[in-house]
Amino acid sequence: MAAAAAVGVLVAMLLSSAAMSTAQHDYGDALHKCILFFEGQRSGRLPADQRLRWRRDSGLHDGAAAGVDLTGGYYDAGDNVKFGFPMAFTATLMSWGLIDFGRSFGAHREEARKAVRWATDYLMKATARPNTVYVQVGDASRDHSCWERPEDMDTPRTVYRVDPSHPGSDVAAETAAALAAGSIVFREVDPAYSKRLLDRAVQVFEFADKHRGPYSSSLHSAVCPCYCDFSGYQDELLWGAAWLHKASRRREYREYIKRNEVVLGASEAINEFGWDNKHAGINVLISKEVLMGKDEYFQSFRVNADNFMCTLLPGISDHPQIQYSPGGLLFKVGGSNMQHVTSLSFLLLAYSNYLSHAGARVSCGSSSASPVQLRRVAKRQVDYILGDNPLRMSYMVGYGSRFPRRIHHRASSLPSVAAHPARIGCKAGAAYYASPKPNPNLLVGAVVGGPTDNSDAFPDARAAFQQSEPTTYINAPLMGLLAYFSAHPNPAHWGEEDQAQVASP
Image (tube, rainbow, N blue to C red; front, side):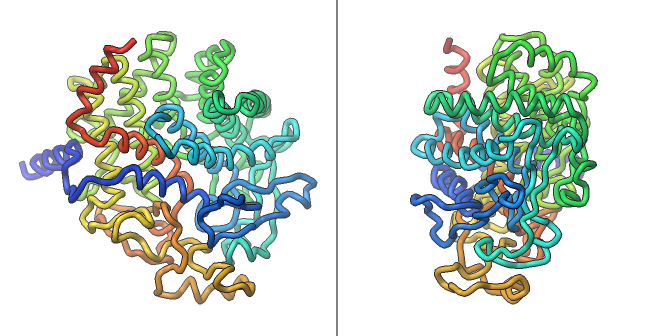
């Protein structure tokens, strides 16, 4: 009985957006900062309108040794390597947020597009040669042995690529997805750029599908253990086809998805979604076609999506596959838990939006859940990140009065070039890494890995990298979430909004 009561309390807490709330959050401010974070991750020559002024130009010769321009793009986390696989996923999720919730971005819409373009411009460079995708710049092992500013990098900027002899269907198909999604984002504001993105996406996907194989096998020592593809490349092929279908509306991609649904495992690992495993995202993305009444052909994907949603709802599913901490945080065993929190919450929100438009509910066996219930769970996770948690602290740097001060991030933890013009060598940075002092540069908007188990504990220590390191793929799905809740902050009105959506043509 005690266990049942505990579950009941947790369910009530997760479904109530008022739980632990101390005040109404300023989601618009959080959104602005969430986007600003990406400026701190920029590689290459920084533009005149760069707002995080403590960062300077870096990686200006990336790709030169290989005879290709690979300047630009994003550093994935607190290091100075450009990993193409998570960068492409980051771009896809930023674009998805803008596609589904563009109006909700309001005044922040243009800066969000700029964040996307910084990634897509780089991905266009990385795919400029036919049947080739440059997937990484930097020797991860050498880079991780140093603690130095990106402006001071002296570790090898080795370039890695996939091609017909060294296939990488996973990273290539994810890159195709990012370019296709980006083409939708820029369709109205820059049609010529949008077309270039879509044309390139088509070419890159054709390469990914024709020359099949995991990039972890082709480039094992370079990309592992940082970004090995553990789930295989099959999910990325479906994911890439789904985005190409959405961007181009070409029948060939529709047929590809249906023909490969079983062989590429659309129903597998449905409680997972991130840079490595796209299955849940595939099912949610394609389900929109069904819920909009456009394509009953894909009904099985809607069933898969419902099953996925049920695993996220405690007290609803007979077989929940996701755990929650006592404070209400969704968590999965492993490092950098906030990547799961933001990506899964984004899928909850996106699917609730599709359901609302269709006047539908999630079917969970003998139970069901409304779009509002899904939205409440997503909002509860966002509120936890922003400070409604047992520690009463925000996990976003610069948001609220209490937030992580010692994040695992080289550029943030070392003095800026303006403050310390002299070069800081590879090993000289160790003293700053070991220092108990707060980071001198605020990486505004960075969301760290956060609690990694069910204790709701957070050490705020650089050495605890699984908890204190920010990543681009934590922030990417959070953009769409914050945009939606900035425009729709009051859960009491959500039912009315749903009715209005259902009634509208």
